[in-house]
Length: 284
Picture 1 (cartoon, rainbow, N blue to C red):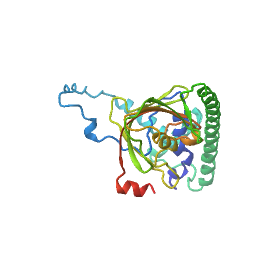
Picture 2: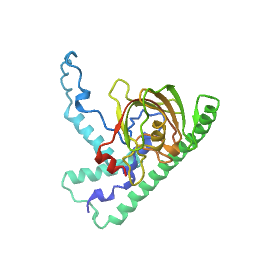
Picture 3: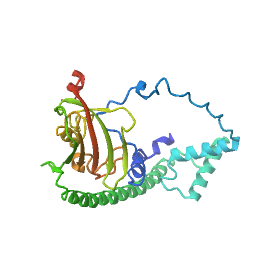
Picture 4: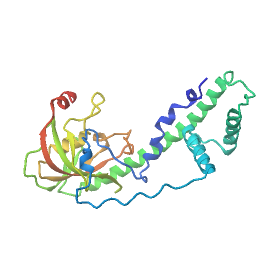
């Protein structure tokens, strides 16, 4: 019997429990983005040479072993599955016996049903806690969204579309807006309604977005609110998009986007072009 068959699937979704927290800094990946090339990240030729790397820190063998134990415990999910200190000490006894070549007092194969039941109980407790956390976070976001979008109605410069998307023009465009199926090149910044910044392209290269809404069949598309918003602002223009969760990532969230979160994008359209044939075909 392999122990890794007992590791619960709940650990795969562990990242949601921490990354979804509105208090944590998160990195946002826009679906449909073509990341900058490696050359774009290189400093200009005139940039000063980097300082010599500092010599690697020296650690004792005991410190290395302690770090090994920490990593092993993390991979086993001891903290996430809320193993008590006493339970960890018992687990350590088994590991010591295995490392010394001592056979266990009980046959692990015969104990497989009990081992699975124990891990399932731990996983169920973890999942219940995770779901409670996400539900609380989702409900808080719903409350915050209602207050935020209600406040937006006071701003006469904000246009509300039938879909629920709100947008405001910050700088008039000088060129045409992207059409569905094309590629829009933009600079952007992203934040939540509570003011938390989720990053953007400031100081870097613009990104390219395929003008095709993501669907379960085409997950590589762009969120619907962004696609609709980009049809309202042409090249050279700047706008702020207020995207409700129904046009973003809904109740589930996505890679650091909390569940039920509304998104605020400030965008500047710097270019529009036809999509490559392969990209256009994939978006159909």
